[in-house]
Image (cartoon, rainbow, N blue to C red; front, side, top):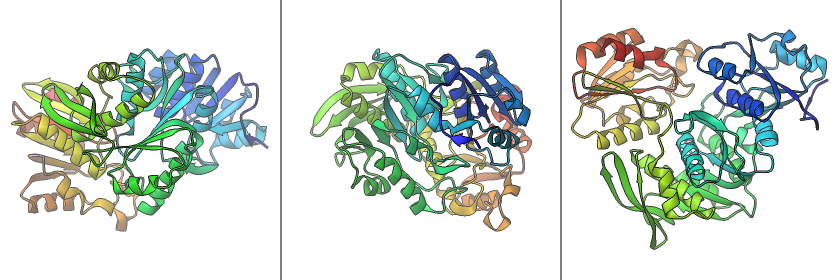
Length: 471
């Protein structure tokens, strides 16, 4: 029988479900580190397929037991892979050693490095990316593995020679043989906890279940580490009371040790003073917009200061940060109409994104286009919450969830009801059965000066490029 362990000597590694964002990054990291890598997936398509091809990673299209016939030293099993997957069956029959993605990251990429782990329901991708860039600009040559493409690097991973590795800690389950959160596999030197809310309804029962997972994250901290936490979140505040390490709080006002003052928008910059206790640590400016990004920056500043970096060096990283793809990313401008892409799908993320855009693009009409497609947003859990989060939009387009048949009928989210509820709030809102209908409506409706904000955690049928082409 195969065993869940990493052998002492490893040369060849096969990754099952290699085209996921994290698994693809891991494959490339391992390739850069000199290992012989193969992978397989049921859906091999760009951009990840092109990314892997450029790294000369051989990828098998489809799951077949014969893909393991060469006998790799180690098999890394993605979290979406079931125990009856043909390659898992062959792996077990052949007695091959296997592990999960976070086990592999911890063993190979993070070996000998101080781990800087960023976790939270919201903001972890942006915060981890900004931290990695600040360390890079400071000359610390960090490694990182993040769940989004960091524009400054053109990648979601990096193998650096410096002492630190930045890891985006995911609360999602690890593998079919390990249903615990991925972040439990790491041992942080510094940790950031941005927020705790209910999400991932396919694996978490309720908010208490989510809190239990993040309590495990707090519990991974050692006595000589530091946890930087957004302590004005009630759920976070409850979790950090019994933390086994020192906790540094950050938040919107002087109730937290780290807090901002003199916040002002001076396009294209957001400017603020970062205060620690009663004193001003430094003056900063950032191209990221919105209160949520201000808080993300504060968390990074607090960690960077704890690592010995001064305000001038940190500010060099903040002001030169180009952001992450799919986070308030401007995809193009046609005839005075700006099309922006954002990953927002949870009600809190939708509200904060719209609020940021409203403040930064004051005087412009905001057209919000929303596709609910996550396992949580396709359920009616937040049905009565969503209407209030669109208050900063002027015109609202709600698409029918594309994969609704996967959800039991009694639990399904209703886009039609959301539109009706929005109209009861005197909002101009419309329902659409598919993406083509959304595009046709926008072409008839948008005008010069409008900002079209598209929010979805998926590709949304390439609505951004299709709309720009027809505009």
